[in-house]
Image 1 (cartoon, rainbow, N blue to C red):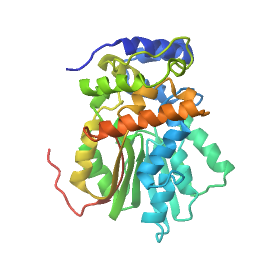
Image 2 (cartoon, rainbow, N blue to C red):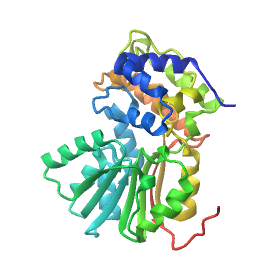
Image 3 (tube, one colour):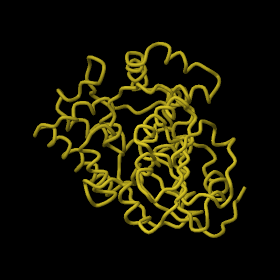
Length: 331
């Protein structure tokens, strides 16, 4: 059963009001879905406290994905899958500030990286970074992917980092539009949320999330930007998710089945996030500068998520896939 409205929706709206102002909240009452989606990403000065800002979490990701806490997945991909390749052409969709694309651009293997995003503000920030680092093999284009036509058999790699779950018609997008843009044996690389659509976590996951939350001492449960604690997680309501960003996890559950249908798996790691992402939301600022107590707390959270993943499937995946020769689309 879907949750329409929850207490978490009220709390999240209040926090957004405090951090981003009334104009941001009012922008969510537009009937234009694309306008509401853009408003979620256009602010280049967004401050938040989500799990992605925690260095120890990054080390966990690196360990699970690459086998080395000090090795990023970009380095891993280049060394293990692209080392002998040159003049690589990459297409990145939903690239935002292009942090990962800029890192790929720093490797000599890449001749051309095209980044496409609906937010011109984020791409302008990426342009400045590219200019500062004298990276001339990366270009940026603001636009809607559904309106863009790509050359057939042109790109060696299509890349998504935390963006594919924002797209609809996943099977057609991956199995037709982007597959045809890839060269023979071209690769699809993703680092993605592939969990429940619209963040509608099942009851057993909510139960484990709250079990994990209890592992965090109260002094580290004070929410970012407000003066109250996080004592329970209720889950996201469907109405708020759609109002906040109509593209949020719209067809996330279909990503892996679609990829496996149209691409051969070369490398695939499911690395969790089922507990860590929702538990550490609004609390992550406590765990940037570590003490022994904070490190122990994170270790305990990691152990609980590892135990959870032995029973239930992961919400996040890193994968490298290769274009299949031919698969017929079914409409």
